[in-house]
Length: 493
Image (cartoon, rainbow, N blue to C red; front, side, top):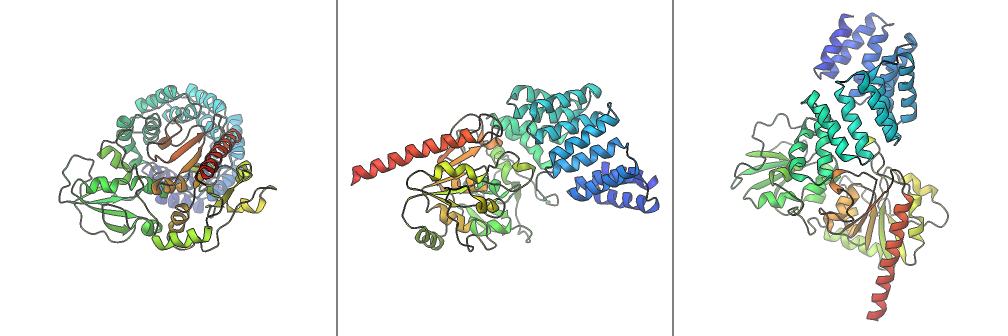
């Protein structure tokens, strides 16, 4: 029991690896210790070892069949694996064993959210809160479900209650910030968005910097500032536009990015030095993560920089791919699948939805998809033709060098909400992006355009998960565009 309790203490302190060692020590001393297995599973889930977490919970349940906490921990790990039906069954079993276990109702709500059953999720959170009125996590989860139901003011109230119970609760503050930004409240939103830096879901490892951070107060004239990427590749592509704005303040700008973006960003205007993440850093005076720059520069909807193209393909690659694609037809680059994981939940759609578009006279569909989702090309419905680029396409260590060159040779890009959309926008390529009912905050609400990318047109779901009307609208708009284009050609001739 001593080692298990010690593991609980280390987990509370955020020392997860040490907690794992304590639980494993407890199990070695007592192989039938169900509590240690369940706690180990919960900790492995926090470390992202989801399959191992499920296995530990299975062992706990085999030792103690009525162990409701282990069922709920198992469900949480299954949620992270995207196995929401199985997770829901676990939480239901936990509730069956102990109908007063508030955590199971909240966790059950998370599974229901994964299944897009948002009304039921809200009801489940309400039951959790009824059992445990100060349950700040349940209030935050409830806010997330209400957000998906487009009940934004009520969602904000739910976040606010969570924060009133626990002011330093990162998830509530971070979710609240994202909702404010989605609603276009940039001043309050970007200020609150700094909470992301404390979130375990944000990939940011800069705790050891001794230089001061910069959020706009100090003069940068004659100074060197380190800007560094965070989150996904699309985020870096979207927010590297601020490099020029910072350089215009008189600074020498150093930019640290993942190795895969080094080739793409080399010619970024205003850049003094591009650094591969993980390499030694030179001397600098200040530092700032890329997504804090809108706050530092007091960005509002009217002052977003980079309104024209701020990235360009390499001339030699552009010439190569332009020749490869030729001049025939109306060339449309397409992408349909983002990286797997909960962040992509609801954003992607099946490639078969391009069928109606492919039937339009003159339309050529060219796949920009890499890795995840490519397998769908082997199962295309009859009549759907998609051109696939050769294996050398973006096959090296540099991401998107060939994609950028291909995109600049296209007439249009149609994509889901992925890095492809951001790259096309940064290149100034006309882009149509299909968005889920409640999208990522940067796409805002309702509007058919994007203040971040003037060449974008946004097509939005009316109902969660319902893509068919979106693609009917896209096909209709493309038909009009092709008719207009052909009409102009006839007039010229």
